[in-house]
Image (cartoon, rainbow, N blue to C red):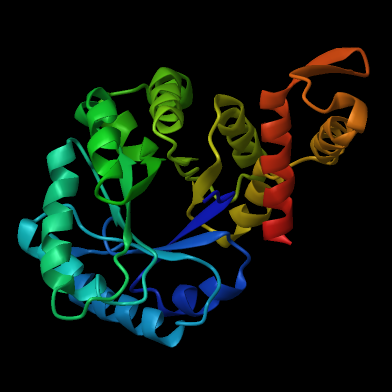
Length: 287
């Protein structure tokens, strides 16, 4: 699973919900948490269920971000959404493995009478405690169906009391930690949102920073960010050309069984071959 663009869509915004499947994002997250006021929670939950039922044949993966608190609202979200046609439950403010275990426990109860496919879990890491407990979250979460980590940069910067003028720089080491743990436990990792959706150049700059850190893609708050995210996190023509050359070279009979070969004056190993094959396979999937 790798997505370049993951679009948050407020569940109570009927126009945004109607347009979401047509916008070209690699994945959609219907948001029941931050995007909704307390009095909108029931309305949003009903809208999410209606969307999932109307779009059963949609090829784009659809996740739903549930609430973290109060516990009664979270339980209502899990009980209502788990049995629907949803790819994943996005769990906000995950601070420990116990947070995921609690969600899984409620989900198992919700699914007992239906026995549909169990949704995956996507963990949002957006608190200092979540950063400190990343390894245990990832290790325990794998057994529960955890299959990605999302950087919650807005909440994290507030809780860390980062300077408003230099938030991104202050978060670099923490974002790198999310990528490190994600790679250690074979979990895709997605960068946090960029709030100024009218600033395309600023978005592109931050997206490039995220790609350089190792993120697979970026979460988005506006459709205008989809195309640049897909471009930044997609493979460039040069990367595709290089990957093709590596695969072709290792395919030659003279290179059979070799661990490293010379391509254009550079030594290329089989680990580079595996990366090249993965990159080319991803291009085929996204066509």
